[in-house]
Image (cartoon, rainbow, N blue to C red; front, side):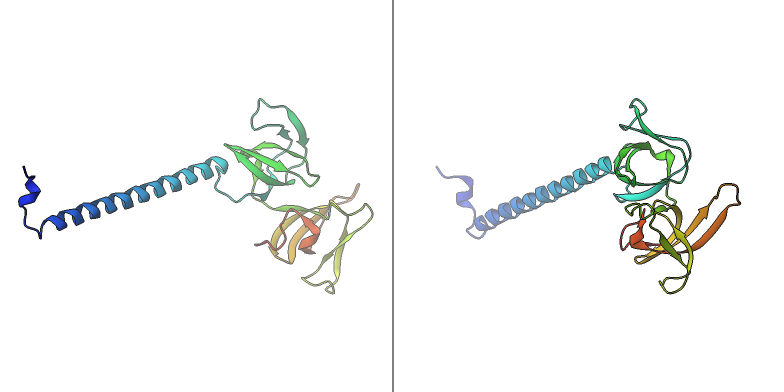
Length: 203
């Protein structure tokens, strides 16, 4: 007629109910923890799939060799969109897929290069947005009154050694026809360079 619990002392029956509630609460907490770990793991896998290198996107790099075939898709089965004929051309990586990198150049053209064709060395183009005939001063130090070492035209390529968010230390090499190569080192306003982000600092 009566269940076994009916004969338990009154002090033990509530304790069993409390124990059951504690166990249920612990199980719920465990489920939430596991769900959180799975969500984090899934996000990590998604990040790894979207950004295999783990490096920040976007970022500036340069071409490693020449000539370099830029393809319309991430693989050698895709056609060639254009060819870079000079090593050290600055490009911006905007997307990654496996070992391939989607790049954008100073003209806004986009294509794909294999990661082995790129390097972390920094270079830039002097104010490619300016009109032909304009020039930008390469200064002796980080000040416009420090004197000008050379006047550089738009799209002139320079090697970038450092930037502090306002100025970039660069080296410009000129190869005049029939003359010997000339190299100038100095500083350019960071806002006058394509190949480095505004306020970016590195050395």
